[in-house]
Length: 102
Image 1 (cartoon, one colour):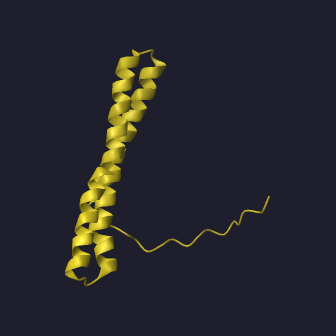
Image 2: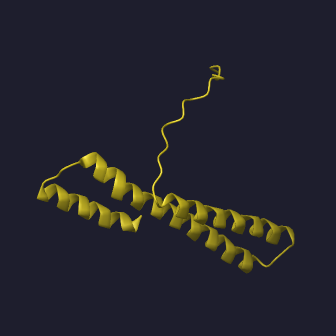
């Protein structure tokens, strides 16, 4: 097995968008739900109640993922593309629309 380097990897430059606060809030909410679910299991709560809470966690994480991806497409992809032709713009707009189904 190769030795693991103790040298830390360099940190990339901060990459922050307006939506990051919303993503963090959604993930914190999901974390709170997870703690509640663990307590529910430990106390012997009904499986239906636990399943409902698990579904809430899944939705919160999916929501965070969706916001992050859409923000990336909206800002990072646009910046990387630079000036585009009408046909290229149509392709980008179609890509943005299809990402709503992620």
